[in-house]
Amino acid sequence: MTTAEKYVTAAYCAVFAMLLLYVVIIALKLTRLEREVDELAERTEAGPVEEPRERTLVG
Amino acid sequence: MGRSYRIPLPGVAALALVLMTAALVLVFFVAPNDANQGFSQRIFYFHVSIAFTAYACFAGGAWKALVHLWKRDPLADLESYVAVHQGLIFGSLVLITGSIWAKISWGHWWLWSEDQLVLFLVLFLFYAAYFMLRFSVDPGPQRANLSAVYALFGVVLIPVSFLAIRIAKGFIHPVVFTRHGPNFGGWILVAYCVAQAAMLVLAYALYRVELAGKRLDERLRGLREVLA
Image (cartoon, rainbow over all chains, first blue to last red; front, top):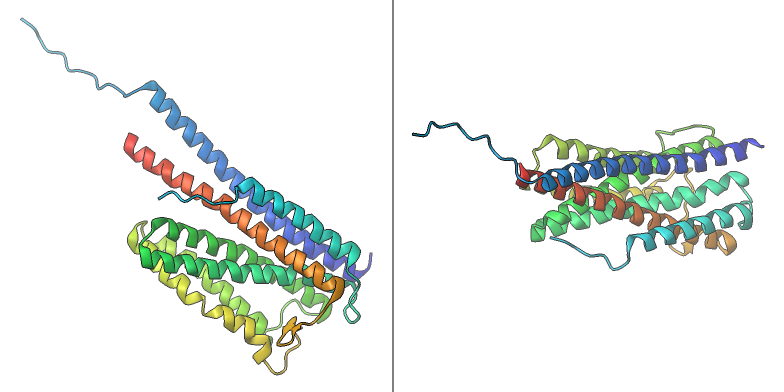
């Protein structure tokens, strides 16, 4: 491999490595969003949380 | 607030993949070696197309900023932010590939005497500061307005950066496009055009993916506030 070939390979690898890094960051973000959606879905499926009532003496 | 795009995202991503594959085949297997620079000239196909893509992203960001200031559309602010972010990613790639090409051609990673290089760095740093400004202000209309004005100011630097190599007298940076058209023809021109199209479509696909994520994030935040 000549010096020119090494540099050209390095340049193209740098481009694809950076784009891959970007995709990984976006994928991590989407994973976080998915987790948040699951949490919200669980909360809505469980229904509204009822406040504990105060005990009152009757009679 | 919702805005629908005519071309579905998977279609854009598939087109980017096809064009990128075609560009790589043309660059490495079809286009001939340059008479002066030899094999190292092959960096040009991606370096120049990435540079124009970065300019397009910054210009797109400025256009969306103008739309935001004009119509006070919060989505336009988000679109402007994502476009500037894409521009910065492609801008960093321009600097990396340019430095590698400079090392082979000129024997230096960077030359401060080259106006084209320095002006592109100024443009890059200007838009890097956009994020410092944006995240130093609380979310809301004030942040959106300040960011929009800043993104609009930056667009002035694009023609300056592009024309720098034509204005400079003692330049060594190669001039690709002259008044009489491109400085090359045949398969070199075909490979460059395909690489340029591939890079633009790829940038658009990444823009759409990031924008979808940001919009989802905002909607989730809104839902959390409602449920809290």
